[in-house]
Amino acid sequence: MKYHNDFIGVNSRLDELQAAFLNVKLPHLDTENQRRRSIVKRYLAEIINKKIGLPSYDGSQNHVFHLFVIRTESRDTLQEYLFKNEIETVIHYPIPPHKQKALQEFNHLSLPITEKIHQEVLSLPMSSVLTDEEITHIIANLNSY
Image (cartoon, rainbow, N blue to C red):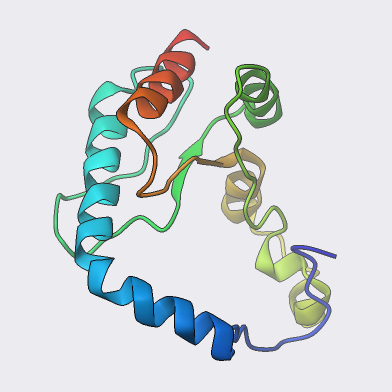
């Protein structure tokens, strides 16, 4: 089951087919990373909603925003609202690590900040192929929520 970890393990997906795709995409990596940063700059500058917490970004070239994760106390309601407006979101890692079966020796711990974060996070669309129009649509709906 996705996001349920029964065992400590590794995540290794690079088979021959994935390596072939990577070989084609690698020459475009810097351009795609720059596009992701430009999307993030728009999100950070244009999402203005007191109900939504945005990640911090110092503008460096060290971050490529594989994910753009916001926080809101009404995550499920916001997710439903965005879905109705044709914006797909994902709740990445909904279960705190210390509550996973793979780390059962820590299941007894109470980590209220970690647990609160895991109830509030929502990943917005983040891809180098998003169009400016799609980004505008996402931002407008977040602001009108």
